[in-house]
Amino acid sequence: MENISVWIGIDVSKATLDIYIRPIGKAFKVGNTEVEIANLVEQLKSFDINLIVLEATGGLETEVIIQLQAALLPVALINPRQGRDFAKATGRLAKTDVIDAQILAHFGEAMKPQVLAIESESARQLSELISRRRQLVEMRTAEKNRSERARGKALIDIEEHIQQLDERLAKLNQKIEELTQNNQQWIDKVNLLQTTPGIGPVISTTLVSDLPELGQLTAKEISRLVGVAPINHDSGQHKGKRMIHGGRGHVRATLYMGAVVAMRHHPVIKAFYERLVERGKSKKLALTACVHKMLVILNAMVRDNLSWRVTDNLQPIVHT
Image (cartoon, rainbow, N blue to C red; front, side):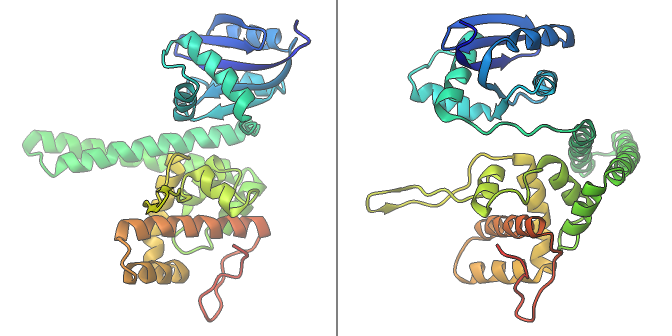
């Protein structure tokens, strides 16, 4: 039976992995440890695998993905919302680890999600450092907010913690810079992205690390991947508001920061934003549209290997 072409779902938890192999109906559980994952990979090598599907679980899936990809097995990583919506659509309302693994295998066969690109070890380290920097920035923002309401010794303690976070961020930025400088391809892409007004070291390294597909997809595909492509909500005569949904939230949040700066310094984005507001669009909607436009421009720049320049009529010399 192991010669049958199969689809595999792996439900990841902190301690265990639940595996389901479709269509042969084989289900089993292993520990989420390096040794047990290695044994699992050896076992899965005996199957003719179409795809292995996992959900993003905040990093708990990292080790299994690394080992599966090292064995050159095809892996897809999906948003948990996709798996849950698919379960509801197929009438599977109950939720257990075993059922979730079955649903992921079924999702793989029915929806055929894109195979996850294999990351190098250095790329993975860069992604982890950038993720850690994001966590420190969030902690610093929270402490700054607390300092506005604190007094006395509590305020002194908060200020000391902010200083410690600043020192940690400086060291982390140095590590990110050193890691980036060891890869010429990253250097070239980071330098290219930073020619764009509003794109600095944080945004450029985030895009290089967490959006490696930049420049390799169409404008629509990259927009859907990040989650800035407007989705229609129309029915009959009713024309609903177009909204964004899903995608890589942390990349989108980083681009929002860039768009805020770009609205002041990026001639094309500034003019685009002002035009939308003049037409009666809300500032929030106009900002989201600017994020979308900026992403499309960056994607075209990387695709065509062209740095940012503008003509006299403020149009970018890139194909968007």
